[in-house]
Length: 292
Length: 288
Image 1 (cartoon, rainbow over the protein chains, first blue to last red):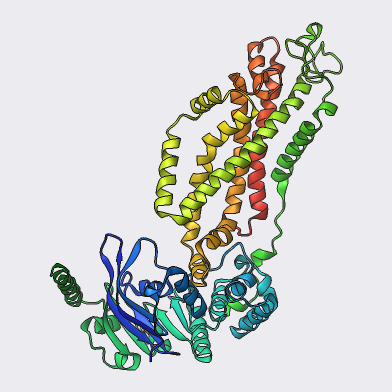
Image 2 (image 1 turned 90 degrees about the horizontal axis):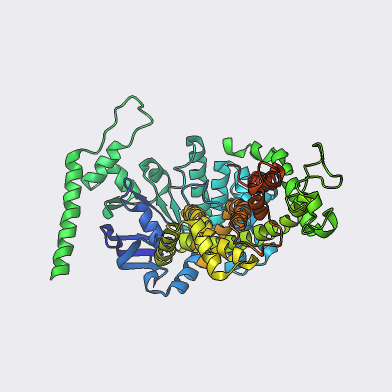
């Protein structure tokens, strides 16, 4: 039984083109699913839809987001917010803008515990200190009293990871958590996310454009193109033999660190044309259904 | 381990207040004290006329009358005493009008920038329409309708200048609203109004502070302009604007009647704007 189950989710720009085309995917408890695709493929949009933070210019036009068996989209906004707040968390992309510059670190970690879940301040503080130790930050007492601008990007990303795990969520959406970081720090952060996820048994949706990262962190992945899932596979199967021509080309296009002299292999135009034709066929079918 | 070497060196720098902050705060403090204790500080009655003492020059010039440090105007009134009493009106207008303008403008700007949607459309259109009115004519018209007086001036300044705050705060609130920390707070289940006040507003305060002090300076100027065209408070009470207006008629015979209020006005407006910038440099938690 999967913890998060997205069924035929469609999202579009208000009065504009579709951004997600009947996306379906499942994430079991303690499972890690990678969402890959090029920029604008809709990977982040899925994460945002699950967490209820779609921008106001975007609307959901159909489908279900089942979280522990309840359809989030069917709940009244207040209940939905409470449910997401109690069970989900976000590891955002850019650690530099993800902490509020006006507040110290401590309230930013404990806010949800104290104000949403009703913990005492002392208990929340102790929890925050433990979490900072868990993410290997030296001198947690001092970090708790610091302002974000006093800390480096890597430290801030560790704090965000600690903060995401603070309320023992069932599901975490990591939205390109390593993209904004230096390569050497990226590796440590990935390891940390993997380690924390395994220890806490959290389901994780990992949004990235880096297939190398997917192979290290995820068990399942969905490949997206233009808001459509073109392939849904187990990671081991995918890297052995991708089924869809587009995902095969995407895999071939990933630069190999082992062979730095090899040229880049961009996705061939024929493959792009083929996958675009699929998207067009999907839209045409939908238009026919709408007309009928 | 680039990220584990400890606190960033930037946090160790102690920021100094700097001469800019000291000078502007100093001048404004002197002015505030002078205004508060005007009846005791002023050497003469600002309204007392003495035609035998008309157009006495300031103390360093030949023919100066002892006790009248900055000279007298054509009716023999003491310029220094009038400046000190004029500071009362100027500062009252600056503080009250500046604060109310700030509250009104910043609130509307924050609502528009954070809530977006139809709230933003309504407020933004209002700002556009508002800014199409020529401000000086608008204020003169307002005073003409409301009648002269301190309250009318304050209302006029608020009505004209709220857009200054609303525009800047709206843009800044939009920028802050796009930050990831807002998404995190949303996911945590904070209601929108809580996010606006607790997450966004603190980050706007440095900007609002600078705008507020700037607006106080502008309020002083607007009051002076309205006094200059005789639309301020009752003509008896001394104001810097009315002193400038009177001094203008006798500029060739007694330049000091014009120049001292001008210098005072200039220093005050400059101090307000420098105070804001200085405070921002000193207290903004983020070094930009």
